[in-house]
Length: 101
Image (cartoon, rainbow, N blue to C red; front, side, top):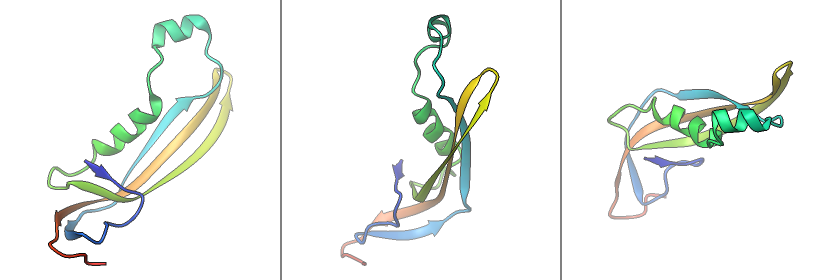
């Protein structure tokens, strides 16, 4: 799956665009205790955020363009958390014989 923060490059032709998709993921950013690290694993929470967005892409689409990332933090009694919001537009594209830009 091609994921871009920009529109499609000039050598790619847009065939179809789909409705906007978004994902909000929670990432603990406070210091985890040793026991918590062992029990929960080190995991890549940021990759999980992109995987959550990717899971919403229609099966016809082969790219997500115009991805925007927004973050916010909040402190709770059980730790400090970063909320990562990803927004993008799924599209179907094909390669063009000439640069369309």
